[in-house]
Length: 191
Image 1 (cartoon, helix red, strand yellow):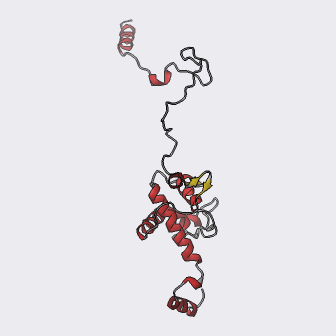
Image 2 (cartoon, rainbow, N blue to C red; image 1 turned 90 degrees about the vertical axis):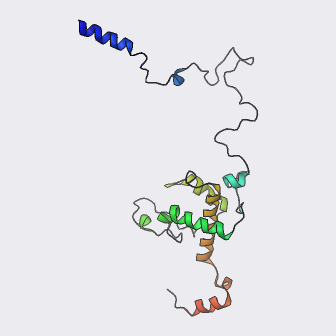
Image 3 (cartoon, helix red, strand yellow; image 1 turned 60 degrees about the vertical axis):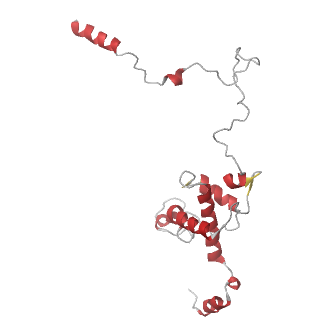
């Protein structure tokens, strides 16, 4: 009997042992429910003027989203410099080359061992707008995860700039090469 009394006293002394956070169990208005507290009788409230939703990106939509008015941007919205392309190469080698290969052809050790659909050859889709590639790097596509948590906006555009350099380097017409290089390339045996 004493043990039962001691146990009860102990449990009463422990206080509130709520597992659920009290903030989750507070009274709140349901969507579309009536609420007599407000003049219009609605529980749903408009956010105060000037409030920015957490999901919304602010600033230039071409820069932040790669889209303007729902269409993919065609031009990289930041200055493309050698430093930007070099930064893009570093990030591409870290995040993209493991699956897409160092030259973006979809040939890599990871791709060779994938049981599901392998990563695409990025040169086959070189006609896509740069905004499309920015969105894929940001949000992912298919089995590929998005990298917006790992790469800031400038780094993502740097990857896109480097991808454009890769696409040009792997598909450039011989006429674009300087005369000396063109002669050397024409003399080399084809592989």
